Image (cartoon, rainbow, N blue to C red; front, side, top):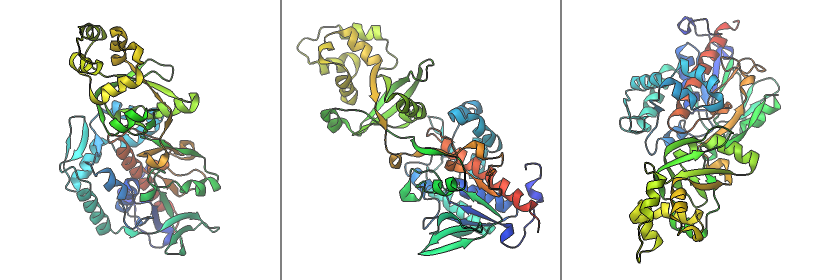
Amino acid sequence: MDDQPLAAMRQRPGASARLVVVGGGPAGLMAAETARAAGAEVDLYDRMGSVGRKLLIAGKGGLNLTHSDPFDTFVSRYGERAREVQRWLERFDADALREWARGLGVETFVGSSGRVFPNDLKAAPLLRGWLRRLRASGVRFHVNHRWLGWDEAGALRFAQAGDDVRVQAGAVVLALGGGSWPVLGSDGQWTGALVERGIDVAPLQPANCGFDVAWSDHFASRHAGAPVKPVVMEWRGDGGRPVRRQGEFVVSASGVEGSLVYAFGASLREAIGRDGSAVIHLDLVPGREARRLAQDLAQPRGGRSFSEHLRRRAGIDGVKAGLVYEALPKRDWQDVERVAAALKSLPLTLLRPRPIDEAISTAGGVRFGELDHALMLRQRPGVFVAGEMIDWEAPTGGYLLTACFASGRIAGEGAARWLDRRPD
């Protein structure tokens, strides 16, 4: 389906030549833009009163649009789905996304962590410019329409202001998101409509989420909300060699969360599902060897407390000291070798992922085996799927957004080609 240039496509009147995009997030908006540029008549329907709400929320602290990783490293962030997502990124990668933003008048920069942001860090100017361009191109928007599935005749069903609205379309792009933002419309309710039609959908699970830890009441009340940095997290799961990453995470009242935790999230979630828990190890003093730490800690304490000694000799205080107290039995505080070893490899047991409605994104969705290379459902010709509805996941850092944009572009291209090849 990829051999015909998009520029050669023509518009056709009537419902049979119309594309309906369901979902107004980045994937849906990109599908609409791509198909409209190819000549398709496009109507976009969204459950909420305005589109792009999740993009705005994601950009509240600075819109992390993509990442500057080399391509191979970038692709590796998609874990078990790297091969499938790579094909999307070969069509629309991080550089292409930055150039697309430039076309909207939004220049970007690479931050110290390699993440890419708009110069003003804001999502709203990008979204406003994008929606102006979409409307000017002829994309029609229909808000406050909740998708219900299909009727017996194959028409799309929407609930709108108490009415059951039926919509005919020549092609459909479903871009309804995952299940992690119900307040913004991504509640995962679409899974039922697809399963009823025989589509294989992997159960939705929390991704980029926190994990529960059995903190003591004292530790949770004193340190909830505190960032832990710098720190190296080591994960020894999956039967392979230990994997270590340096960064930061945040202690929550119930456990841990943050970018460093999310980087290991998929593997941790699977290990907990298999074994009932997962143990990570924290290096609280990156750059200092255990032997040197032991020597420093062996210096006479005098009348100083254990906490003051840790602060003076190892630079450990605040939440890091609290973690040591949580994990190291009091009987070991006098053993400098054990204290030094704990500072370099502090075990932390994760009990369960936080609920899906607290997650940034979700894993699971329409399995790749149900889709062709244009992201069309094999069992429902003319119906395409994009974004988080598909069974892939990625850590935060711009990887999620980039793949959503890229999949929307592919689905939009595929839908436009499908419409162009239908008989009049």
